[in-house]
Image (cartoon, rainbow, N blue to C red; front, top):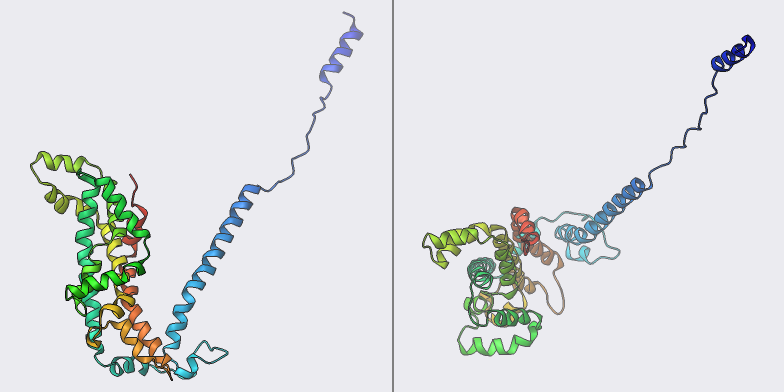
Length: 306
Protein backbone atom coordinates (compact mmCIF):
# COMPACT_ATOMS: atom_id res chain seq x y z
CA UNK A 1 0.00 0.00 0.00
CA UNK A 2 1.39 3.35 -0.90
CA UNK A 3 2.06 6.11 1.58
CA UNK A 4 -0.55 8.34 -0.01
CA UNK A 5 -3.31 5.83 0.20
CA UNK A 6 -2.54 5.07 3.88
CA UNK A 7 -2.70 8.77 4.73
CA UNK A 8 -6.06 9.04 3.00
CA UNK A 9 -7.34 6.04 4.95
CA UNK A 10 -6.17 7.57 8.26
CA UNK A 11 -7.90 10.78 7.33
CA UNK A 12 -11.19 8.98 6.76
CA UNK A 13 -10.91 7.04 10.05
CA UNK A 14 -10.04 10.09 12.16
CA UNK A 15 -12.62 12.26 10.54
CA UNK A 16 -15.45 13.36 12.89
CA UNK A 17 -18.57 11.32 12.52
CA UNK A 18 -21.77 13.23 11.99
CA UNK A 19 -24.34 12.30 14.62
CA UNK A 20 -27.94 12.29 13.49
CA UNK A 21 -30.16 14.01 15.99
CA UNK A 22 -33.91 13.61 16.14
CA UNK A 23 -36.10 16.48 17.29
CA UNK A 24 -37.58 16.00 20.78
CA UNK A 25 -41.22 14.88 20.74
CA UNK A 26 -43.75 17.49 21.78
CA UNK A 27 -45.41 17.07 25.19
CA UNK A 28 -48.88 15.59 24.57
CA UNK A 29 -51.36 15.57 27.44
CA UNK A 30 -52.81 12.22 28.36
CA UNK A 31 -56.42 12.36 27.25
CA UNK A 32 -57.33 9.48 29.56
CA UNK A 33 -56.28 11.45 32.64
CA UNK A 34 -58.21 14.48 31.40
CA UNK A 35 -61.36 12.36 30.90
CA UNK A 36 -61.00 10.79 34.35
CA UNK A 37 -60.60 14.20 35.97
CA UNK A 38 -63.68 15.44 34.13
CA UNK A 39 -65.67 12.41 35.30
CA UNK A 40 -64.70 13.12 38.92
CA UNK A 41 -65.76 16.75 38.61
CA UNK A 42 -69.11 15.82 37.02
CA UNK A 43 -69.73 13.09 39.58
CA UNK A 44 -69.16 15.35 42.55
CA UNK A 45 -71.21 18.11 40.96
CA UNK A 46 -74.11 15.67 40.63
CA UNK A 47 -73.61 14.58 44.25
CA UNK A 48 -73.83 18.19 45.40
CA UNK A 49 -76.95 18.90 43.32
CA UNK A 50 -78.75 15.75 44.49
CA UNK A 51 -77.79 16.41 48.12
CA UNK A 52 -79.11 19.97 47.94
CA UNK A 53 -82.29 18.75 46.24
CA UNK A 54 -82.95 16.18 48.97
CA UNK A 55 -81.72 18.18 51.94
CA UNK A 56 -83.36 21.52 51.14
CA UNK A 57 -86.94 20.48 52.12
CA UNK A 58 -85.71 19.28 55.52
CA UNK A 59 -83.80 22.52 56.13
CA UNK A 60 -86.84 24.57 55.08
CA UNK A 61 -89.06 22.55 57.44
CA UNK A 62 -86.71 23.16 60.36
CA UNK A 63 -86.49 26.88 59.64
CA UNK A 64 -90.25 27.15 59.12
CA UNK A 65 -90.84 25.57 62.51
CA UNK A 66 -89.48 28.79 64.08
CA UNK A 67 -91.72 31.10 62.02
CA UNK A 68 -95.27 32.30 62.48
CA UNK A 69 -98.03 30.62 60.49
CA UNK A 70 -98.42 33.67 58.23
CA UNK A 71 -94.70 33.80 57.55
CA UNK A 72 -94.59 30.11 56.60
CA UNK A 73 -97.05 30.60 53.73
CA UNK A 74 -95.86 34.10 52.77
CA UNK A 75 -94.95 34.74 49.13
CA UNK A 76 -92.26 35.24 48.12
CA UNK A 77 -90.95 32.81 50.76
CA UNK A 78 -88.23 33.82 53.18
CA UNK A 79 -85.36 31.62 54.25
CA UNK A 80 -84.86 32.77 57.83
CA UNK A 81 -87.65 33.81 60.20
CA UNK A 82 -87.86 37.51 60.94
CA UNK A 83 -88.39 36.66 64.60
CA UNK A 84 -87.47 33.23 65.97
CA UNK A 85 -90.28 31.42 67.80
CA UNK A 86 -88.88 28.40 69.69
CA UNK A 87 -92.12 28.31 71.70
CA UNK A 88 -93.72 26.55 68.71
CA UNK A 89 -92.27 23.29 69.96
CA UNK A 90 -93.74 23.82 73.41
CA UNK A 91 -97.10 24.67 71.87
CA UNK A 92 -97.09 21.39 69.97
CA UNK A 93 -96.65 19.48 73.21
CA UNK A 94 -99.33 21.41 75.06
CA UNK A 95 -102.02 22.17 72.47
CA UNK A 96 -102.61 18.59 71.29
CA UNK A 97 -104.89 16.83 73.74
CA UNK A 98 -103.32 13.54 74.79
CA UNK A 99 -100.04 14.17 72.99
CA UNK A 100 -97.98 12.10 75.50
CA UNK A 101 -100.30 9.14 74.83
CA UNK A 102 -99.80 9.60 71.07
CA UNK A 103 -96.04 9.55 71.55
CA UNK A 104 -96.38 6.34 73.57
CA UNK A 105 -98.59 4.79 70.88
CA UNK A 106 -96.04 5.58 68.17
CA UNK A 107 -93.10 4.18 70.11
CA UNK A 108 -94.95 1.10 71.36
CA UNK A 109 -96.27 0.01 67.96
CA UNK A 110 -92.98 0.81 66.24
CA UNK A 111 -90.75 -1.09 68.66
CA UNK A 112 -93.18 -4.00 68.88
CA UNK A 113 -93.34 -4.26 65.08
CA UNK A 114 -89.54 -4.09 64.84
CA UNK A 115 -89.12 -6.89 67.38
CA UNK A 116 -91.72 -9.11 65.70
CA UNK A 117 -90.30 -8.54 62.23
CA UNK A 118 -86.74 -9.22 63.31
CA UNK A 119 -87.75 -12.60 64.73
CA UNK A 120 -90.35 -13.86 62.26
CA UNK A 121 -88.82 -12.44 59.07
CA UNK A 122 -85.44 -13.93 59.90
CA UNK A 123 -87.02 -17.25 60.95
CA UNK A 124 -89.03 -17.60 57.74
CA UNK A 125 -86.10 -16.34 55.67
CA UNK A 126 -83.83 -18.99 57.20
CA UNK A 127 -86.39 -21.70 56.41
CA UNK A 128 -86.52 -20.63 52.76
CA UNK A 129 -82.72 -20.35 52.54
CA UNK A 130 -81.69 -23.61 54.22
CA UNK A 131 -84.52 -26.04 54.89
CA UNK A 132 -86.14 -28.38 52.40
CA UNK A 133 -89.90 -28.88 52.59
CA UNK A 134 -92.70 -29.58 50.12
CA UNK A 135 -93.67 -26.76 47.73
CA UNK A 136 -90.94 -24.48 49.07
CA UNK A 137 -90.28 -22.79 45.73
CA UNK A 138 -94.02 -22.42 45.06
CA UNK A 139 -94.64 -20.81 48.43
CA UNK A 140 -91.66 -18.51 47.95
CA UNK A 141 -92.97 -17.44 44.54
CA UNK A 142 -96.43 -16.76 45.98
CA UNK A 143 -94.89 -14.66 48.74
CA UNK A 144 -92.92 -12.60 46.21
CA UNK A 145 -96.06 -12.19 44.08
CA UNK A 146 -97.92 -10.57 46.98
CA UNK A 147 -95.40 -7.71 46.89
CA UNK A 148 -96.69 -6.48 43.51
CA UNK A 149 -100.36 -6.34 44.56
CA UNK A 150 -101.44 -2.75 45.36
CA UNK A 151 -102.11 -2.22 49.05
CA UNK A 152 -105.52 -0.57 48.58
CA UNK A 153 -106.88 -3.90 47.29
CA UNK A 154 -106.65 -5.28 50.84
CA UNK A 155 -108.25 -2.36 52.67
CA UNK A 156 -111.82 -3.65 52.85
CA UNK A 157 -110.99 -7.36 53.43
CA UNK A 158 -108.52 -6.45 56.16
CA UNK A 159 -110.98 -4.18 57.91
CA UNK A 160 -113.73 -6.84 57.83
CA UNK A 161 -111.38 -9.50 59.23
CA UNK A 162 -110.07 -7.23 61.99
CA UNK A 163 -113.58 -6.03 62.83
CA UNK A 164 -114.83 -9.62 63.19
CA UNK A 165 -111.78 -10.40 65.31
CA UNK A 166 -112.56 -7.38 67.58
CA UNK A 167 -109.12 -5.88 66.88
CA UNK A 168 -110.21 -2.53 65.45
CA UNK A 169 -109.10 0.38 67.65
CA UNK A 170 -106.51 -1.82 69.39
CA UNK A 171 -102.76 -2.23 69.09
CA UNK A 172 -103.33 -5.74 67.79
CA UNK A 173 -104.79 -4.43 64.53
CA UNK A 174 -101.46 -3.04 63.33
CA UNK A 175 -99.31 -5.76 64.86
CA UNK A 176 -101.33 -8.52 63.16
CA UNK A 177 -101.02 -6.74 59.82
CA UNK A 178 -97.29 -6.02 59.96
CA UNK A 179 -95.60 -8.61 62.18
CA UNK A 180 -94.42 -10.36 58.99
CA UNK A 181 -93.51 -8.62 55.72
CA UNK A 182 -92.52 -10.31 52.43
CA UNK A 183 -89.92 -7.72 51.45
CA UNK A 184 -87.90 -8.26 54.60
CA UNK A 185 -88.26 -12.04 54.33
CA UNK A 186 -86.70 -11.79 50.87
CA UNK A 187 -83.87 -9.64 52.24
CA UNK A 188 -83.15 -12.13 55.04
CA UNK A 189 -83.40 -15.12 52.70
CA UNK A 190 -80.82 -13.69 50.31
CA UNK A 191 -78.48 -12.80 53.16
CA UNK A 192 -78.70 -16.29 54.71
CA UNK A 193 -77.85 -17.83 51.34
CA UNK A 194 -74.58 -15.87 51.37
CA UNK A 195 -73.46 -17.51 54.64
CA UNK A 196 -71.29 -20.65 54.10
CA UNK A 197 -72.81 -23.96 55.14
CA UNK A 198 -69.65 -25.17 56.90
CA UNK A 199 -70.65 -23.75 60.28
CA UNK A 200 -74.09 -25.38 60.10
CA UNK A 201 -72.65 -28.74 59.09
CA UNK A 202 -70.21 -28.64 62.01
CA UNK A 203 -73.05 -27.79 64.40
CA UNK A 204 -75.17 -30.65 63.03
CA UNK A 205 -72.29 -33.05 63.66
CA UNK A 206 -72.17 -31.79 67.25
CA UNK A 207 -75.87 -32.65 67.60
CA UNK A 208 -77.38 -29.17 67.49
CA UNK A 209 -80.90 -28.79 66.04
CA UNK A 210 -81.98 -26.43 63.31
CA UNK A 211 -83.46 -23.84 65.66
CA UNK A 212 -80.34 -23.91 67.83
CA UNK A 213 -78.20 -23.36 64.74
CA UNK A 214 -80.45 -20.50 63.67
CA UNK A 215 -80.52 -18.84 67.08
CA UNK A 216 -76.94 -19.32 68.26
CA UNK A 217 -74.90 -19.35 65.05
CA UNK A 218 -76.74 -17.79 62.11
CA UNK A 219 -78.44 -14.80 63.77
CA UNK A 220 -75.18 -13.35 65.21
CA UNK A 221 -73.69 -13.52 61.70
CA UNK A 222 -76.74 -11.81 60.18
CA UNK A 223 -76.40 -8.64 62.24
CA UNK A 224 -76.06 -6.29 59.22
CA UNK A 225 -79.22 -7.69 57.58
CA UNK A 226 -81.09 -7.59 60.90
CA UNK A 227 -80.17 -3.94 61.43
CA UNK A 228 -81.21 -3.08 57.88
CA UNK A 229 -84.55 -4.83 58.45
CA UNK A 230 -84.98 -3.10 61.80
CA UNK A 231 -84.29 0.37 60.40
CA UNK A 232 -86.65 -0.12 57.46
CA UNK A 233 -89.38 -1.48 59.73
CA UNK A 234 -88.90 1.39 62.18
CA UNK A 235 -89.21 3.98 59.41
CA UNK A 236 -92.27 2.31 57.90
CA UNK A 237 -94.17 1.92 61.15
CA UNK A 238 -93.18 5.31 62.60
CA UNK A 239 -94.34 7.14 59.46
CA UNK A 240 -97.61 5.21 59.32
CA UNK A 241 -100.69 7.34 58.75
CA UNK A 242 -103.28 5.68 56.52
CA UNK A 243 -103.55 2.45 58.55
CA UNK A 244 -103.83 4.39 61.80
CA UNK A 245 -106.57 6.51 60.23
CA UNK A 246 -108.56 3.41 59.24
CA UNK A 247 -108.12 1.11 62.21
CA UNK A 248 -107.80 3.60 65.09
CA UNK A 249 -111.11 5.33 65.79
CA UNK A 250 -110.37 6.82 69.21
CA UNK A 251 -108.10 9.86 69.64
CA UNK A 252 -106.32 8.10 72.50
CA UNK A 253 -105.09 5.50 70.00
CA UNK A 254 -103.68 7.99 67.48
CA UNK A 255 -100.00 8.24 66.69
CA UNK A 256 -97.99 11.46 66.31
CA UNK A 257 -98.61 11.83 62.59
CA UNK A 258 -102.35 11.47 63.01
CA UNK A 259 -102.30 13.82 65.99
CA UNK A 260 -100.73 16.58 63.90
CA UNK A 261 -103.87 16.70 61.76
CA UNK A 262 -105.63 18.43 64.69
CA UNK A 263 -103.75 21.60 63.64
CA UNK A 264 -105.60 21.59 60.31
CA UNK A 265 -109.18 22.77 59.95
CA UNK A 266 -111.56 24.00 57.28
CA UNK A 267 -110.90 27.66 58.02
CA UNK A 268 -107.32 27.79 59.24
CA UNK A 269 -104.16 25.70 59.28
CA UNK A 270 -101.57 26.25 62.02
CA UNK A 271 -98.57 25.78 59.76
CA UNK A 272 -96.04 26.85 62.36
CA UNK A 273 -97.14 24.08 64.74
CA UNK A 274 -97.44 21.56 61.91
CA UNK A 275 -93.83 22.27 60.94
CA UNK A 276 -92.63 22.02 64.54
CA UNK A 277 -94.51 18.76 65.02
CA UNK A 278 -93.07 17.41 61.77
CA UNK A 279 -89.55 18.08 63.00
CA UNK A 280 -90.31 16.25 66.24
CA UNK A 281 -91.69 13.33 64.22
CA UNK A 282 -88.57 13.20 62.03
CA UNK A 283 -86.03 13.19 64.88
CA UNK A 284 -86.42 9.52 65.99
CA UNK A 285 -85.95 8.21 62.44
CA UNK A 286 -82.98 10.51 61.90
CA UNK A 287 -81.30 9.34 65.11
CA UNK A 288 -81.91 5.67 64.34
CA UNK A 289 -80.45 6.00 60.86
CA UNK A 290 -77.41 7.98 62.02
CA UNK A 291 -76.62 5.35 64.65
CA UNK A 292 -77.09 2.36 62.36
CA UNK A 293 -76.23 3.73 58.91
CA UNK A 294 -72.95 1.80 58.63
CA UNK A 295 -74.63 -1.53 59.27
CA UNK A 296 -77.66 -0.54 57.21
CA UNK A 297 -75.58 0.14 54.09
CA UNK A 298 -73.53 -2.99 54.68
CA UNK A 299 -76.63 -5.14 55.10
CA UNK A 300 -78.20 -3.88 51.88
CA UNK A 301 -74.93 -4.05 49.91
CA UNK A 302 -74.03 -7.62 50.93
CA UNK A 303 -77.49 -9.11 50.52
CA UNK A 304 -77.41 -11.90 47.98
CA UNK A 305 -73.60 -11.96 47.63
CA UNK A 306 -71.77 -15.28 47.86
